[in-house]
Image (tube, rainbow, N blue to C red; front, side, top):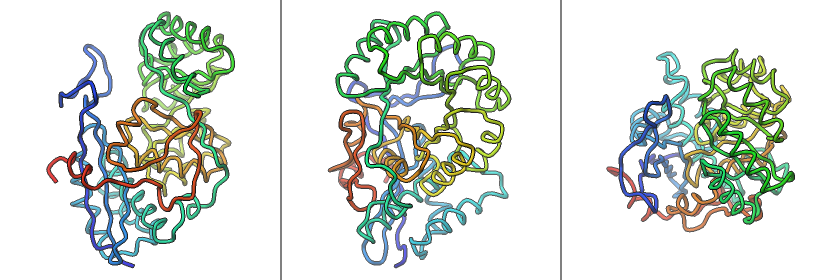
Length: 377
């Protein structure tokens, strides 16, 4: 079997309540840029036997960048290769730009899309789900925490009630305001949902080390399960200090794409829970990171963020095969939107994805819809 065709699709389609294509960033703040559309990059790999595999490189801003990398850098390496040489092919693609200083970022996102597509293709070729060929499943049920919107106590409580009613036993609040406001929001949610629901708080790297520690101590009193991304990703020592100072879990790592990046983070214990994004690592490197984390006794909680349905499906497959899986991120309201390119895809039941034996990633892509939302394809 040989790879005969590599195609990349930069996708952009509007959310139900927003038709603008503009990118946004918070006024007066050092914050990540966001798209007002759902954006990602999908890879389609075809073989000489007519088998097709799909993957995704998470690209919530500038998906065309990842698409260009696929076409200019990954395609020449993959054409003519045997898709079963998947781990070798990841290493070959990664090494292609290593000397030129591209060990992360859009380049590795593009590799992730190719890698996921190769595993999907191998699963279809063997008639087995990816988790069976990736190592075999440890569990049948992938527990989820749901992203909980709401910036005020009242709105956050309203969203939390809806999510708990939908079956979720863990919720993550996205809060980047001052300490007193964050504590008031979390206190209101804790009071309403009770003690049996796990709560997480994501600071999106916006706090200083001392501010994060002070906030964390207040959150500990509210029995918050973890504090996520409290300070700048580059501040390794700061992350260490926060983790050591707090009794609660500190979670981070969504910005890291390879085991090379994670090695120092694990050695120095920058976190209690690591949360790489499989739409950025791919399955091959994602599993390597998970097993490296396991050697340091660090639980693994896959991040999803702006990833689409293929990223979600790949994360489910990886979560099934690693010993140190803890919990997986999920956007309850966003799922239907992200499934627009799929005829069928995994759906959560009572706050968890249930493993099945569908070949590959278990996602049936609608090629017409994929083409319809593709930019310049």
